Amino acid sequence: MDIESLKKQAAYQALEHVQSGMKLGLGSGSTATYFIQALGEKLRAGELKDIVGVPSSKRSETLAKELGIPLEELSPLGVDVAIDGMDEVDPQLNAIKGLGGAQTREKIVASSAKLFILIGDETKTVQQLGEKAPIPVEVVPFGYQATVAKLAALGTRPEQRMGTEKGKAGNEPFMTDNGNYIFHCFVTPPIDAENLATEMANIPGVLEHGLFLNMAKIAYVATSKEVLKLEVP
Image 1 (cartoon, rainbow, N blue to C red):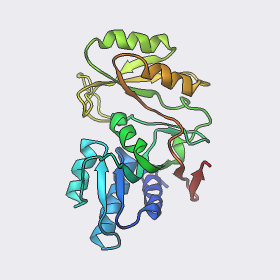
Image 2 (image 1 turned 90 degrees about the vertical axis):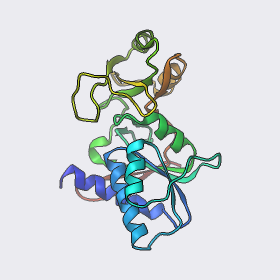
Image 3 (image 1 turned 135 degrees about the horizontal axis):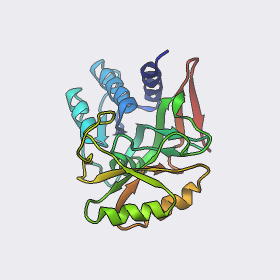
Image 4 (image 1 turned 180 degrees about the vertical axis):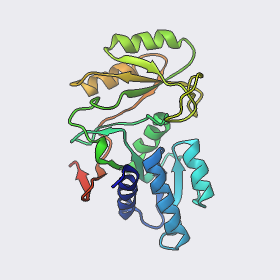
């Protein structure tokens, strides 16, 4: 079974947590796209009603509008459920997210949710964060070289993301929906993720990092045999 089919299976499994009348955080990236498409199908079929979505990127917003999913700004009340993909997830459901370039808005939405659910395929699972994916860090353009030097001083290896879309090379720096740069900070496991997250967040010029720690309660991971439901207490 190909990876895209696995992503779709995980996305569809997460729909069991969606009920009519809910406000949903809509994630970004390829796996979240399958969830948004599945949600649109349920609404068109009348199987779900009175759903309102809060998108975490302009791309997700555009897709949701095309599918007729009602949208609104994130309110102080947050959302009932946020569902999003991951670039890595460990056994405690700590994750690295943001290789699509939207981790700041993703984290804002996810942190507002009563329930945050990760979805993805088995290639995203790791024993320790940093085994496969770098940590994306959103950096304000002003003084960015000084900011990146401080990221490197933490023991990371920052590389600026270039191009316009994931997987597409380019000569210009990638710009987030917020008008900032992304630096992929490579690390060598094992890392103290909690400490690194705090140190990154304390650097002036860092808007947000892609370490999503102690946030997800459930993850659906699709394998070639089944979709696993992973939970933390």
